[in-house]
Length: 414
Image (cartoon, rainbow, N blue to C red; front, side):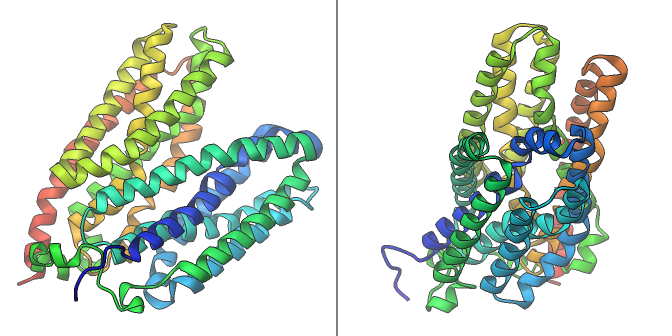
């Protein structure tokens, strides 16, 4: 088959990115802008209301491995419809609620929908539709998602200020419902064969795809391996490092900075995230995903060190937040690529969804732990020490897991 100048895979990438951008930065990550007005109107504390985020993390942990199996059983359109209805109907329903218990209950369908639309949809479709430059493609998807987040977050903030949080839940939820259904039904296709195509780059890369990568490692064998344990711990550490984002403002205030300068630094962090999304994708294609992942850990170590020594120095604080954003942008890129690198494509959907369990595990345990450490000691010093050691351990385990994966892949073709 002769390759065409324009491949439908790019439509898939744009469509998946748009859905991810609405479901992720707009709905899934909007909890912070709703927290204060909702808590005030309900007459509860921020802490009491924010417990629904812990419920969401637990639901994500349970649902991820189940959701991964759905992509092998049902069409992507059916999965998107399920995810959209779970997430947006629950989001809209919050606009009618007057008890904090509603947030605890509706956190479950919110999380279930987000797993399908934010965690799994993009990586699964990219793996099906692209046969080369997958790192760059994943980076582009993350960049589009980040840019959509930059657009939707101020929109939501203004809607709450001008129309109230109830109208915003209902109005934006209805908008998201309609937009994602239209995109999903009109543009998404399950596999390239649905359009009579081969994956983008297939002709150029088919000869380079090794027999072991095509066959891959079975789920049963992979889950018992050192490679899987190493990859899971790597994701826990990387997500735990990213979770410090929620504490950067508190840390900045603690070292004598004011909110306006901290806000500027956090904006620069978003720039770092946008740059990192593409840069990490390009590097993973050029030098390999394992060396790139080690480099991400190195950037993370630099950020931790600069946070630790900043001590009121705004320049060091800004550089640290930029590097933090750059490193944390890697999560959506390295996780799917490392899964393919370690285990091949055979049971990719199941294994990737299981690897991603590391993210909610880190959120459940480490986010409150950082707050507890700060409350106990009055500083984040021990948090930085923990992160420094954890990042080094993650690097060592990643190298060990890579060596083990080579043995697994070799055995899978014998």
